[in-house]
Image 1 (cartoon, protein in one colour):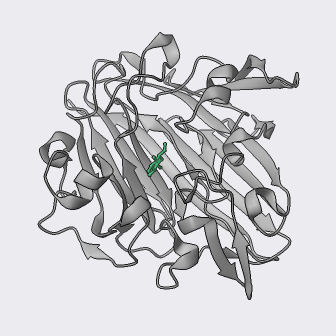
Image 2 (cartoon, rainbow, N blue to C red):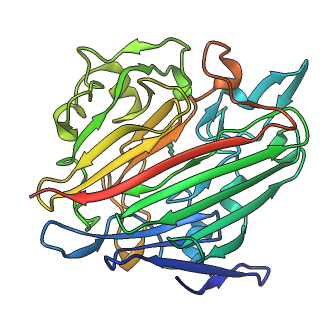
Length: 351
Ligand code: BGC
């Protein structure tokens, strides 16, 4: 584990970059600004290490970022319709930052916070726990929420992200990790040749503003069927209305067998480099997003412009707009309860 200065905020506070290295010399780096995952450097089938995560070179890049590269987003990952919901007989109005809706915790969500970090080098594998405090009323949400996010990097090239949250008043909580992956190790390539599997028979179709209609739809016979591994390019330009309206994949899949234990939710394979990524989670939903709003205007690490389809996100979470959809699994957190999430990104290779 090493740490170094990653830059400063305009008010003078220092931002730190933490690097966890395992016995295979593979590394992940994290920043306490937005508790962001900054890099994931893993081998290809010949052992050549490369960074498979889009990100920024320094803290300023994250300050200026509007694409949520690598951040922990919250309090609510994805959208809440019109930023409004009722809970315990009261109606709450959240900040609006995506058309008429609330997205990823609002303009000053968790991704804008400088989290406190605790380093743990005593367990078998190094980890960093990031702590954040979200005061009562922040972005319109009720209750003071404390959230810890622990990143652990083990010798199997497995990154575990564990979340623990509490509140002092009835609220909703649904954070997620917003990493954009490109397993080629060079974000000048697109992710279109990656083969994807998502362990889901259903998804939640979206209506205007990408708000779920509330129905669950079978993936069968649609380009959203990833039950067997399939090249992303195979279906992404299909005239299917759900894809056309989103400019690609940007949907929530209903993961099979949700029972709050960790299951394999998705796999991604880049046949050329042989890199293989598994996503395991205890969450009921997985948002697969193909960087439909990256347009080359955002420059990341190495000054590389992030073009359309240069990264993909697999965000484990509860379904979008659940506070307004009583038929979806509940995101309500009560005082005395603990919010928990475990999501793993495991890297290996094939020949
Ligand atoms: C959402 C997209 C959104 C993007 C912002 C994704 O999680 O699903 O709709 O545009 O985040 O970076």
